[in-house]
Image (cartoon, rainbow, N blue to C red; front, side, top):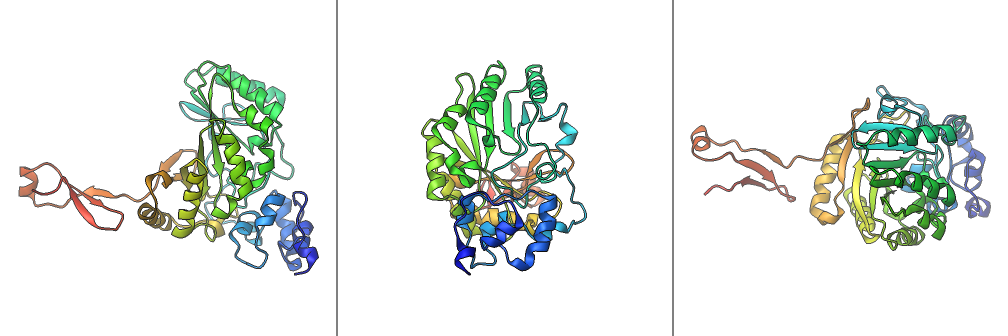
Length: 365
């Protein structure tokens, strides 16, 4: 490739022509990229651009961020709102699916746009960029009027796209509600744009009357660059606990060695692995989804490779708004003993260890 194609991006790339100019897509793909970009948002930050291997047509970083014509192919069962946010939204910006917690979707913009995003129909061209001031007031009033809400999860979009000043105001508003004890923030920013994690941004995350948790989204160990690790350290050093979110993606992290390196990388950054999401039924994402059987096999492999600190929960958001369900492998089943032996002794179970060996519990005498 020419030096033009390999030049380092100094700004976020948003147009198909920019992706081609930086060697992230071939010129022959311009028409398809233009069609995708007209429907779904595109943004690739300089940090992410620098991570992409232009010489690898199957680069796992590019696969997450660079548009593909495959996104224009909808499969049966895919839906604009795959996890059913709308069915549980009593006021604009709020999703109240579980009794003790709500989502508060403050913004509809991100530093980068993932090609597998389950809210891809809600962000991007022609969409609102943020909640209006009246909508934020109504959302906060809803939270105040529901004393069962213990946790507020800031999501979107990416809440760390707010300015530190605006984020601090929202955090103070939430912390002032007596029954809100936890504010959790879901973000890609420490990985996608680590320079945004400034001292002012970190200060905005902390409030005296509520506990802040940060959920960091990354899907491949190469995303945990020195800059990303330093950004996470700035957060952890203030005492803010962090957990991880990842999506199981075909061609990105659907092998045990990559998942092992990713989960260990999180723990090295003081981030506890939390969720490994099965890919949602968002339109045009079939090429990135694995099967549940493949996911369970990977979780079995991970169990034997890394410590408990590195184990995420493999979960599926049930389409239609029915919430998350753990879908990891089942290591326990009823033992098939003779009827006489069952009558003489307590029930026994078969348990499979990480090597695949089967054991009875309690053991036979």
